[in-house]
Image 1 (spheres, rainbow, N blue to C red):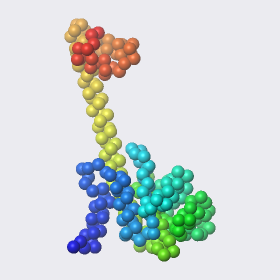
Image 2 (image 1 turned 135 degrees about the horizontal axis):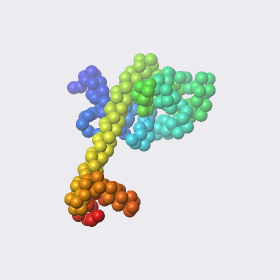
Image 3 (image 1 turned 180 degrees about the vertical axis):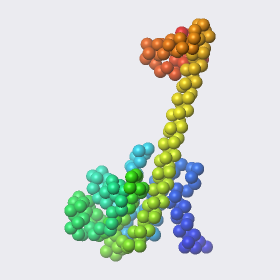
Length: 237
């Protein structure tokens, strides 16, 4: 039988992205964040949104109405979620029925109230200098947001943020590695072509390169393509 402590440990592993050797499943991760936040924080509803430069905006929520609210806030740039992402700082619990909320988010607040929410708070997914998303938590008359729950929500958000930023860095590293490999392959092809052409025409490698480059420019072709054809015997210069 799973103990409460073991259950909590399993949740932390789940929110950390699971196996680090496998690609991060962002939809599954955000869905888990939303569901676990409701379970552990005691929020009436939750929504999470992530904006990464390697993928489209991802938004998940505990219900469709909340998801539309979160997406609408992102599109309009108004609400606790967008504010949280811009600043990288938590948006404290705010009473949606009060004057502050109406003045701060004039379009967002009526929609949230229409869904039955009376309180809202948001937590950044990431640090002050790089928030890649936000976790928005909603309270109601029957299920108000608590101080303890909100403190715990930041811990959940931090775990997910680490997983997201780690995956983002890995993707960038893979891209850079791929670019370096392609550049090396291209360079090798050109060097081989210079050697082939120099041997065929009794030229220096510098003279061979001038001919290769001139042919590529004249015919508006990539130098690497010309080089490969010379090496493979498909092109004689």
